[in-house]
Image (tube, rainbow, N blue to C red; front, side, top):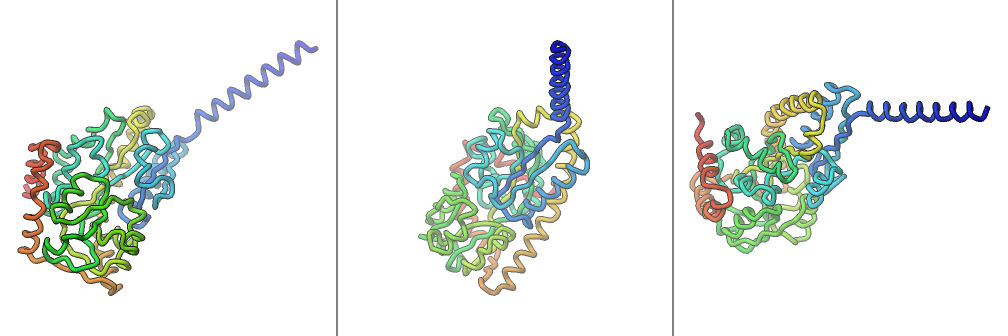
Amino acid sequence: MLKLSMQALVCAVSLSVAGMLHAAGNAPISIKFAHVVAEHTPKGQGALLFKKLAEERLPGRVRVEVYPNSSLFGDGKEMEALLLGDVQLLAPSLAKFEHYAKQIQIFDLPFIFDDIHAVDRFQQSPQGKSLLTSMESKGITGLAYWHNGMKQLSANKALHEPKDARGLKFRVQASAVLDEQFKALRAAPRKMSFAEVYQGLQTGVVNGTENTWSNYESQKVHEVQKFFTESNHGAIDYMVITNTKFWNGLPEDVRSELEAVMGEVTVEVNKQAEALNQASRQTIVDAKTSEIIELTPEQRAEWRKAMQPVWQKFEDQIGKDMIEAAQAANSAP
């Protein structure tokens, strides 16, 4: 009797373990997508669209959780979290990658691109595409470029000419190129996380910054900055990245479908980015809290001349061929 009871117990436990394993095998793949900006920005909308399409195309097989506004990891922690596997998708600004691949600093060079269309042409070129896979030896795989938009300057004084920036403290991302960009203007760069910018400007820890219209408006920077200069001196774009080991470990059909979804989302994000930036610019105009300074072609040429020596300083790190490819992208085929 006891022998039969023991056999029944072993059988029951075996069935229970098998059931648990079966359930675990059928559990959806969890993908945490974290970012540091508001949901209505181009990046925020892109993350939500990726979640929607991925879960529609792969029902029950993937679950995407989106964490906006540094709610999961902030600027300083998100890359470490990706490498540790605590988050599976990020879309950091391209300025964040200098420690992983020096060539990506090409995007930080001031006035290297004439406009967002030139940025797009470069990203679709062989040189641009090669940067997506340039960090795989360090465990990071690039999946796509997402546009945010062209950068404008903000300050608590009017910036018409390069000399107007002298002595001001500008918030920058952690980027050696951006440090040198402001040093070329005889200004003082100050590294600061995105989430701290409003308070930094409000309290005078920094006097100005650089960003896109959508980021300015979403963070209400126009409440604490009197002047914006429409310089279009660079792009703030993002690279959507994943942990290489995680991505390569996905079932092939899942990975293939997620790649297709990412391609569709990228087209939509890049299409909407300019419209969102222009709407944000108009919101700032309507708020009447700040003045937007529009540069003449001659003034813009002066700013470019003042910042262009930064190109030479980083040519050895970035590569002359990469810089030439970026300049070539300014001419439409």
